[in-house]
Figure 1 (cartoon, rainbow, N blue to C red):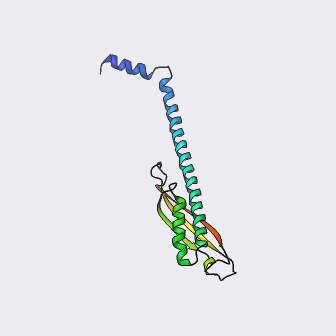
Figure 2: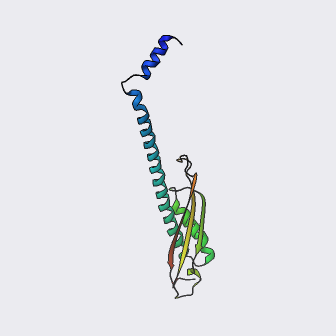
Length: 151
Protein backbone atom coordinates (compact mmCIF):
# COMPACT_ATOMS: atom_id res chain seq x y z
CA UNK A 1 0.00 0.00 0.00
CA UNK A 2 1.54 3.27 -1.12
CA UNK A 3 1.55 6.62 0.55
CA UNK A 4 -0.95 8.01 -1.96
CA UNK A 5 -3.42 5.20 -1.20
CA UNK A 6 -3.21 5.89 2.53
CA UNK A 7 -3.77 9.60 1.87
CA UNK A 8 -6.84 8.81 -0.25
CA UNK A 9 -8.33 6.56 2.44
CA UNK A 10 -7.70 9.23 5.10
CA UNK A 11 -9.30 11.86 2.91
CA UNK A 12 -12.42 9.67 2.40
CA UNK A 13 -12.70 8.90 6.12
CA UNK A 14 -12.22 12.51 7.18
CA UNK A 15 -14.38 13.95 4.40
CA UNK A 16 -16.75 16.44 5.93
CA UNK A 17 -19.36 16.44 3.18
CA UNK A 18 -21.62 14.41 5.47
CA UNK A 19 -22.11 11.41 3.21
CA UNK A 20 -20.40 8.89 5.45
CA UNK A 21 -21.76 10.41 8.66
CA UNK A 22 -25.36 10.15 7.43
CA UNK A 23 -25.06 6.56 6.26
CA UNK A 24 -25.63 4.82 9.63
CA UNK A 25 -28.73 6.91 10.35
CA UNK A 26 -30.28 6.16 6.99
CA UNK A 27 -29.39 2.49 7.34
CA UNK A 28 -31.12 2.23 10.70
CA UNK A 29 -34.15 4.14 9.43
CA UNK A 30 -34.42 1.91 6.34
CA UNK A 31 -34.12 -1.24 8.43
CA UNK A 32 -36.80 -0.02 10.83
CA UNK A 33 -39.11 0.90 7.92
CA UNK A 34 -38.72 -2.49 6.27
CA UNK A 35 -39.33 -4.27 9.58
CA UNK A 36 -42.42 -2.18 10.33
CA UNK A 37 -43.77 -2.74 6.82
CA UNK A 38 -43.25 -6.51 7.16
CA UNK A 39 -44.95 -6.55 10.55
CA UNK A 40 -47.95 -4.67 9.15
CA UNK A 41 -48.26 -7.18 6.32
CA UNK A 42 -47.93 -10.13 8.72
CA UNK A 43 -50.59 -8.79 11.12
CA UNK A 44 -52.92 -7.78 8.29
CA UNK A 45 -52.65 -11.15 6.64
CA UNK A 46 -53.33 -12.85 9.98
CA UNK A 47 -56.44 -10.72 10.53
CA UNK A 48 -57.79 -11.51 7.08
CA UNK A 49 -57.14 -15.21 7.64
CA UNK A 50 -58.91 -15.08 11.03
CA UNK A 51 -61.97 -13.50 9.40
CA UNK A 52 -62.01 -16.17 6.71
CA UNK A 53 -61.74 -18.98 9.28
CA UNK A 54 -64.62 -17.39 11.26
CA UNK A 55 -66.73 -17.37 8.09
CA UNK A 56 -65.84 -21.03 7.57
CA UNK A 57 -66.98 -21.81 11.13
CA UNK A 58 -70.32 -20.09 10.50
CA UNK A 59 -70.76 -21.99 7.24
CA UNK A 60 -69.89 -25.30 8.90
CA UNK A 61 -72.33 -24.68 11.77
CA UNK A 62 -75.11 -23.72 9.37
CA UNK A 63 -74.65 -26.76 7.13
CA UNK A 64 -74.43 -29.05 10.15
CA UNK A 65 -77.63 -27.55 11.60
CA UNK A 66 -79.66 -28.38 8.50
CA UNK A 67 -78.43 -31.98 8.43
CA UNK A 68 -80.85 -34.69 9.52
CA UNK A 69 -78.43 -36.81 11.53
CA UNK A 70 -75.15 -36.41 13.36
CA UNK A 71 -73.49 -38.77 10.89
CA UNK A 72 -74.51 -36.48 8.01
CA UNK A 73 -73.56 -33.30 9.86
CA UNK A 74 -69.80 -33.91 10.02
CA UNK A 75 -69.12 -34.35 6.28
CA UNK A 76 -71.51 -31.49 5.47
CA UNK A 77 -69.69 -29.21 7.91
CA UNK A 78 -66.26 -30.20 6.56
CA UNK A 79 -67.35 -29.55 2.99
CA UNK A 80 -68.87 -26.18 3.94
CA UNK A 81 -65.71 -25.11 5.79
CA UNK A 82 -63.48 -26.12 2.88
CA UNK A 83 -65.70 -24.23 0.43
CA UNK A 84 -65.81 -21.13 2.65
CA UNK A 85 -62.03 -21.09 2.95
CA UNK A 86 -61.81 -21.36 -0.83
CA UNK A 87 -58.74 -19.82 -2.36
CA UNK A 88 -58.43 -17.18 0.36
CA UNK A 89 -56.71 -19.30 3.00
CA UNK A 90 -54.64 -22.41 2.43
CA UNK A 91 -54.63 -24.60 5.52
CA UNK A 92 -51.78 -26.97 6.20
CA UNK A 93 -54.06 -28.75 8.64
CA UNK A 94 -57.86 -28.27 8.76
CA UNK A 95 -59.89 -29.69 11.64
CA UNK A 96 -63.68 -29.31 11.88
CA UNK A 97 -65.47 -30.47 15.02
CA UNK A 98 -69.22 -30.53 15.55
CA UNK A 99 -70.86 -30.25 18.95
CA UNK A 100 -74.09 -29.26 20.58
CA UNK A 101 -77.35 -31.03 21.26
CA UNK A 102 -79.37 -29.67 18.34
CA UNK A 103 -79.43 -32.77 16.16
CA UNK A 104 -80.45 -35.12 18.95
CA UNK A 105 -83.47 -33.12 20.16
CA UNK A 106 -87.00 -34.22 19.47
CA UNK A 107 -89.54 -32.54 17.23
CA UNK A 108 -90.62 -29.20 18.67
CA UNK A 109 -87.55 -28.84 20.88
CA UNK A 110 -84.95 -26.19 20.23
CA UNK A 111 -81.22 -26.79 20.13
CA UNK A 112 -78.02 -25.55 18.57
CA UNK A 113 -75.13 -27.02 16.65
CA UNK A 114 -71.65 -25.69 17.29
CA UNK A 115 -68.81 -25.94 14.79
CA UNK A 116 -65.18 -25.39 15.73
CA UNK A 117 -62.78 -24.87 12.84
CA UNK A 118 -59.01 -25.04 13.42
CA UNK A 119 -56.77 -24.05 10.53
CA UNK A 120 -52.97 -24.10 10.59
CA UNK A 121 -51.59 -21.54 8.15
CA UNK A 122 -48.00 -21.42 6.91
CA UNK A 123 -46.38 -18.02 7.34
CA UNK A 124 -42.95 -19.04 6.13
CA UNK A 125 -43.27 -16.97 2.96
CA UNK A 126 -43.40 -13.71 4.95
CA UNK A 127 -41.78 -14.67 8.24
CA UNK A 128 -39.02 -12.65 9.84
CA UNK A 129 -36.56 -13.80 12.46
CA UNK A 130 -38.40 -14.40 15.71
CA UNK A 131 -41.80 -14.97 14.08
CA UNK A 132 -43.36 -18.43 13.87
CA UNK A 133 -43.36 -20.40 10.64
CA UNK A 134 -47.02 -21.36 11.07
CA UNK A 135 -50.02 -20.06 12.98
CA UNK A 136 -53.10 -22.00 14.11
CA UNK A 137 -56.36 -20.08 14.04
CA UNK A 138 -59.34 -21.61 15.87
CA UNK A 139 -62.84 -20.15 15.56
CA UNK A 140 -66.21 -21.36 16.83
CA UNK A 141 -69.74 -20.61 15.64
CA UNK A 142 -73.21 -21.83 16.55
CA UNK A 143 -76.37 -22.20 14.54
CA UNK A 144 -79.90 -22.98 15.75
CA UNK A 145 -81.59 -26.13 14.57
CA UNK A 146 -85.10 -25.88 13.16
CA UNK A 147 -87.25 -27.58 15.81
CA UNK A 148 -89.71 -28.80 13.15
CA UNK A 149 -87.21 -30.07 10.59
CA UNK A 150 -87.77 -33.37 8.86
CA UNK A 151 -85.85 -36.24 10.42
